[in-house]
Image (cartoon, rainbow, N blue to C red; front, side, top):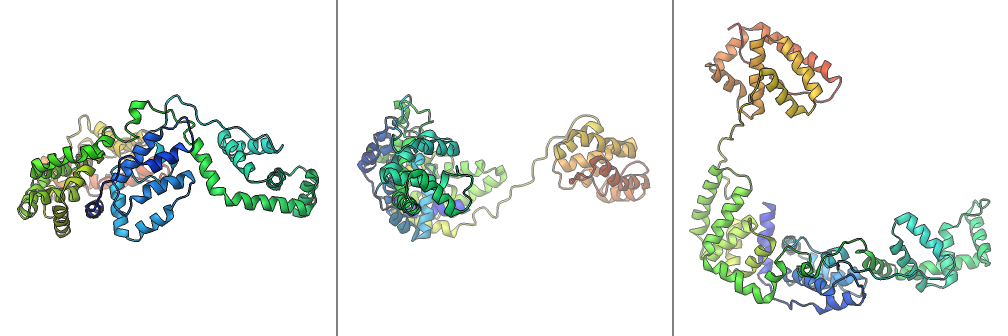
Amino acid sequence: MRAAIFAAFAILAFISFNPVSFAQPTVAEACESFERPNIDCACVASRAAVYERVSTDQTRPLIAEGYLYALGLDNSYEASMEAMMSDPIAAMAAIEMYDQVGGRPENINDYEQGCVIAGASPLALAAPSEPAVVDEYIAGCTASTGDVRFCTCDASRKTTRVSDLEFEAYYRSFSDYSDSDATTTKEMTEARAKKMGVSSAQFDSLQSSARNKMSAHQAEDEAYCAVVTWADDEPGVDAETRMEAGFEPGLVGRLAPQTLNSTVVSDAEADPLEKARAIVDTACTSDGNSEQYCTCYKAEFETEIVAKAVSPGVALAWAVMANGGSGMTGSEQVTLMQSIPQADNQSAAMMFMETMDMGESCSQGPAAAAPKLEGTPRERMMTVCIAENEDEALCDCMVSKMEAQFNPDDFELMVDIREAEHRGAEDAFAEVAAERGLSREEAEQALMNNPAIIGASMSMGASMMQCMGGMPQMPTFPAMPGMGNGQ
């Protein structure tokens, strides 16, 4: 129901959709500025454009600004995010829309997935030659992260922010413990300063200055290194596959402006009622409902929605809202939602809010009974026990003790009851009694006249504990078995 409510709000937010250019030069130019040989920036632009086309007016700026944010470039992403979150209902609706194409992109991987060029080498990264400790810095970083290219990039960016002495002081401030006699902070500072040929005060000033300068560019530098290294281990795809921009086949073309209104709208207008009925039918069945329930639900759809809708388009819009476009791909649902007239969407949204109890009066009907087990009573009891406990050795012990404590007829009776319970019988005791030509009352009376079966049942608890040896879970044997010999 939550998904259906969000879908309704999503369509209400979506009806103000205004097409934007399918090419996104801002995204393309930002991508190209990094000059990465293994990234297809045209593919990235197409991918961003798909996200934009499923955005509302309020959330559309998030896409380009979010990409600039992921790249570490100037952006207004936080302002765009605040604008979206200022209306929680619209924000939830936007999330529902983005879910149709895999969710809103949140990092560089999301924006560029499916756009890595097969066989292309990543951007070359050269380690800086100065200062002398930079090799030690890269080696320590690699040992910690396991990513030598990221560490090389990180070192390269940091050394451009500070002087050689500042970088060395920064590095030694957290890594140099070579003087074993230095135990206090003051002593370690003196030892590190001595190695650099500076005073303690100069050392503190150098490392503090380095940290301040690096901190001012930390987000930018971390983003840059993530951008140029994230795809290092990606296998990449060929040019034809990159045309899909990492989405399901056909989605990019389906959302292109030239095809949007020519295909989906004509399909919807051709017979919106049949489309609506197909969605309702597919959704009901795919949700695991019984034939009896779906027959009832579809009848309610005809009387409560189709008959009362002011136009066939309203019935179609309601079907999409209530069922999430079941049976359609994400791209098909998005384009269908775009094709429905605004007035129909508004009417359907009101109708949806008034019919949220659709189907509550319908019944699933009696559950279909599982087929009976075959084999001897012991074999059937072993099958039931293993299905419930997943421990063959435990079951062998328990079934053996059970078989030993009951006479053959009573043991078979007990197994019949346990099997009926296992198959989901509403009243296993009554079902087994009926199979023996008895009513439930007659079976209960027979039980009262059979002290042997009562005694054996009561002793089963201790026997099971012996088999389980302190194991916490016990199978559910019938506490009140039916009837057996001695009737």
